[in-house]
Image (cartoon, rainbow, N blue to C red; front, side, top):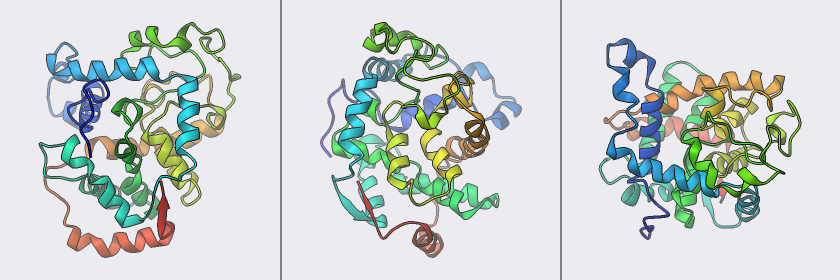
Length: 291
């Protein structure tokens, strides 16, 4: 994979975004163990400069029109077709450029999430959701900049909430001064339901559309909204959600700790897990996936 220029790839690696989330929303068990919460929420640390630049780009360019163009470009799924396990090999190409300081590839990170879910006795479709939820990061391998692949997600087509991280950067977004999009409801109506709301573009939206025909609805909510922190942590968009969304978000909130807090430097033993996951994938997914 060709290295991206500084403006298109301000993060040192894709995991830097998730590390930043851990600073904003530290593991409650870690807090309970006596660690100072101020250490997690230090936004003045120079090491966070690349994260701020990432969000400057994200918030400047994630417009309603931008998202519509990306949906038209990528949701036809005509870029590539691969068997499911070959898709993981493809995803693992990200480790070379995006995460040079770890020996764990993308599949191993996903296995840690899915194994934590399985250990707690959740349904097998949720285990599979843990395995597949970051598959959309292959967008980076199609030349997409990081700010259009990862990052907190949010609705476009209406006013950007001040509960979104670094909200000041939305001042440079043209939708912020467009009367079609800069009101509380914008192009939407009160409590219209998230099924009618267009979300910012990234790996969440992409993997949701990739797998929406194969897994139960709670898994699809996990895919689509696991990075929608301004809602499932800050309740910033209750005015767009309907009763069904609130019910389904219980699953998003159940999933989120497994996504954030299950990372471990010890790699899963794939030789012991392979049989289980091959059968699980075969149960729910087609032989090949379209990208």
